[in-house]
Picture 1 (cartoon, rainbow, N blue to C red):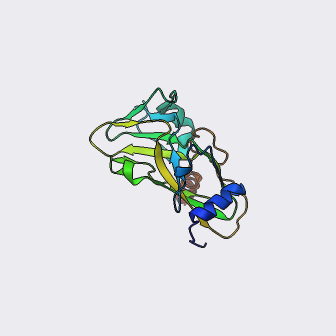
Picture 2: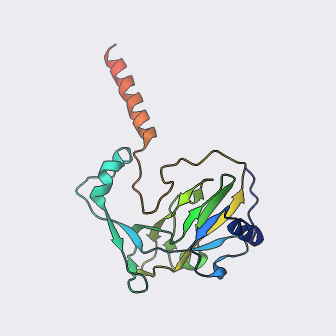
Picture 3: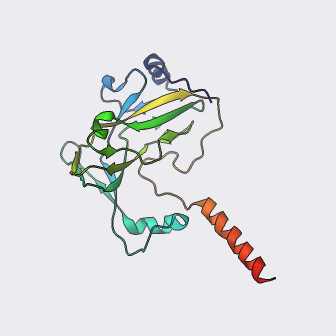
Length: 204
């Protein structure tokens, strides 16, 4: 994969030809020399203390409903206060669509990072062909509550040319609202492998 980042002129060209979609863009100044600033939507997924003893990645689909509450704020009226050391899911205000020959990387803006806000815990890579709203994994690493405004610029996305790939078919494609994760299939395979090994050893 080529690591050539798209310049502002290339980004504008891709937007004009709708090869890349990032909309709505409320301000042309969101487009920087090699990235686009993204805004915070008004939809949040809060983790609550559940009766479950732990979160199990191998059974996350069933458990997610037991420890996640969704909150929708009113634009230009409500704010969200992220408490110290707390983790919450949020999403981009903009809908994003990539062609099959462009990958993207999501990162937090340095201004919010200096306030103690981590925008994504791990999921910064955006596959070619992705369509939907990107999810933020927000963490307040500071010691004071952070006041978050819906529509504030919170992250930036950069685009890179790549070899053309097949249509993206990941679990978060066409994501309009925060979507629960799927069970970790790899863990399921490992568990089945261990069970078979255990059963075969017991039969000896």
